[in-house]
Image 1 (spheres, rainbow, N blue to C red):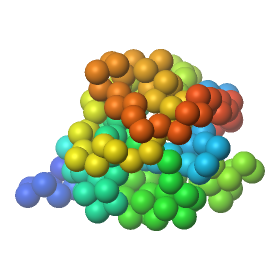
Image 2: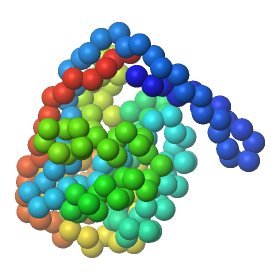
Image 3: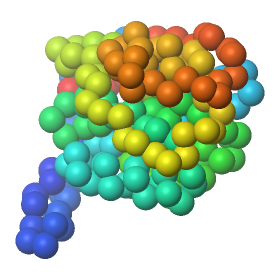
Image 4: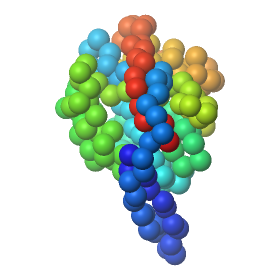
Length: 185
């Protein structure tokens, strides 16, 4: 597994040093799929990123692609997940992920997943707690079609009802849960 050390530099820049780390073990973790009946929702995975950089990147994506509200979760001190629970095609989601500053291996992960989808962790990972809800990133594009199942899942994961913009939605209430093996270091 490749790990990165981020060193802050003057004028908002960072020096990123990457090293290969041997993993202790493979473990099972719980995740959810971006796949919905009529397409996919947007999952972004940021590693070794300051929260302000994540927010700025998501706001840029919201403006460029006219994405609606995004929900920010913290996975560890400098790790974040972002969920935009709107329905898009595979090509649209891949384009959004590829133009983001999120983990590039996450953008390509659907190519290696036998179900051709993206998955974000929602459960424990060894001693790491499940991702914790931080904030909703507001967008002026709130009228995009949303997936009801992912909205309900966000509520289950701690997003306050006042932050969930439920309409318009596709009426599909389910979310695909997934247990997968990942490296734990």
